[in-house]
Length: 227
Image (cartoon, rainbow, N blue to C red; front, side, top):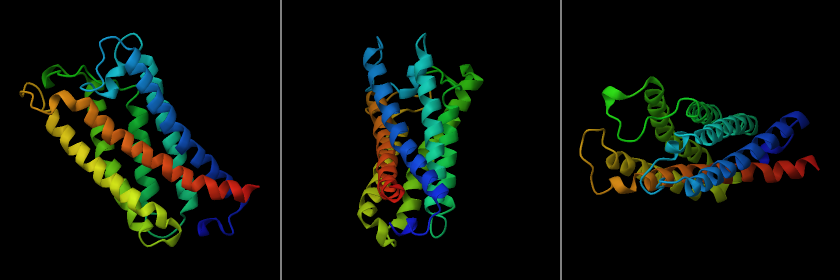
């Protein structure tokens, strides 16, 4: 890609490390919560959030999982910043990724309250977790759209334009449906409530898949440049 022309070795290695983090983090996170959800007795991934795995005696596994993902997404944001030093999304894009990384990292120690907890009984860490989650699911599609603005005019990213736009639209739809499916207690459930976990996973995995593909696109030309 043209963005690598004239790069100093240090910058090139920073991009490569960031790209590696952007590939490894989403894969490890998704694999961990999927396996843990299958092994956790009484856990229903169709209706329960990923964050619910942070509850209980084995909750530390998902807590660490959030910490690792947050750290890797932050490293990825630094790699993107080095790869796109100017032009559209050169500032806003890495900044949004960094905020998302902080939200993911904070979602680890700030464990959610059990699903269905009424507002009056929410803990401080549960409230913080909810705020971090709301920020993440709001910024995830926004981030895709911000980078799409660059990709649609940058010939070096032609193959990534449609995927980025579709990811942004898909995440937006999933997030809207998820919010409809989870009215704040004690509001009654609705037809979508039984699919709350599935809708959350759709938004989350779509974003993480986009991060993975973005990171892979960055890694390939950088890897060649270092040989």
